[in-house]
Length: 290
Ligand SMILES: Cc1cc2nc3c(=O)[nH]c(=O)nc-3n(C[C@H](O)[C@H](O)[C@H](O)COP(=O)(O)OP(=O)(O)OC[C@H]3O[C@@H](n4cnc5c(N)ncnc54)[C@H](O)[C@@H]3O)c2cc1C
Image 1 (tube, rainbow, N blue to C red):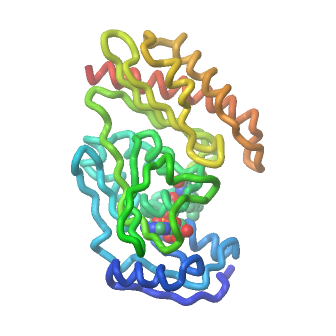
Image 2: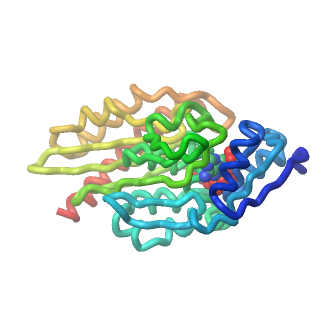
């Protein structure tokens, strides 16, 4: 399979990349790891007239800890995030989520920021940014702006980004001290996109749930934060009965679609099962940390 003809540019500076995006607007597409864009071009699901390859911009290849967040540059590969000691120590939820992206070869090339920009609601990185309350820096003709996860993801493969903007950085807040976490998902085969994925961050104080965050993949057009279930958990005593109550709340609040991979009813059921498992695992980790 071959893509439709396109003009290729490999800028050497961020300013050059921005000038190209500004000049070509929605005719242009940024090429990062190419693990989503290239297959879509080959299948002619995407036909950009201009490709702006950012792989020669080493200034965007970084992962640092700063101001209570992991700062991940646009060229930082998924595998680098997965293997980083900073990720393991400060944001193990992110490490566990990145590990489940496709296959090793995909993660060697694919970037965390590219996955966020692609905005697939089945992707781990969109839900990880959502559950952690993360944000991105979008740089464009008007300078830099910060976009929260909640404002970024609009629908399937659609963000609030202007076509002339480049996401230069994503920031994932580190886990709160003593919090437990879990990333749990089900896929038909190893390396496939998950049918449903659930991330949980749980803090317990004085014998009750002090804070609970739940985000899901594969159950809507964007990553979904299960706010009803979160409210049901807050202030309650942890345990199997509470996890089951939260699982029911998740089943009631998600609105998955049927597709060729699974029915909506199956996804809804699995969302509840995985929520229960993820809460139990996160609680175990919170107890270990206490
Ligand atoms: C076989 C296979 C299995 C996969 N399994 C999974 C999986 O289980 N989970 C998962 O999450 N993903 C999966 N993926 C997708 C993979 O994670 C991609 O790496 C990711 O979706 C896109 O990142 P990329 O760096 O490759 O971006 P690219 O493919 O280069 O770009 C993707 C899109 O984002 C835009 N873009 C990229 N970077 C920027 C930027 N800095 N600013 C603005 N726009 C930008 C591009 O223009 C394009 O529209 C799989 C891919 C394959 C081929």
